Length: 131
Image (tube, rainbow, N blue to C red; front, side, top):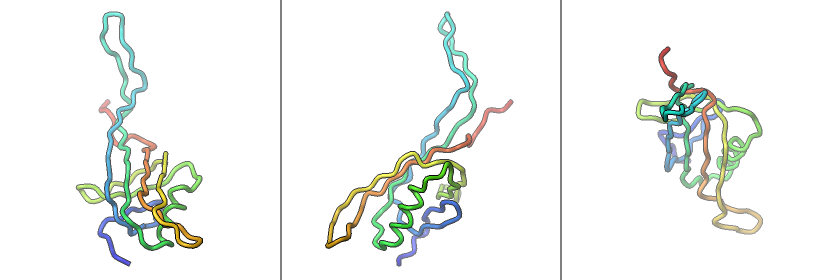
């Protein structure tokens, strides 16, 4: 099996798989945000959450693909993720909000999948306002 220099770790289990795309989104979550009668905005920021969308490359090994699919679709509340970043790795706790793929070849009684994608939502903010 090929060795990729940056795979993904979920709950301490490393998956040596190609990553085509890792999209990062910074979502700002407010405790409240409302407009006053004069149009001014009042808000209390809870923090900034780093959420991710990941697209995987072709995973030729069926056992690796099945293990990754099983982990991504595991019915648990939260996972611990370690993903590659510009500074090495980023570790966070969160949940998987969606997973998708598609069949590209059926042979006999087996199917090959491609286009595996998933979305990770952070449980806690990565950054919080100074008090």
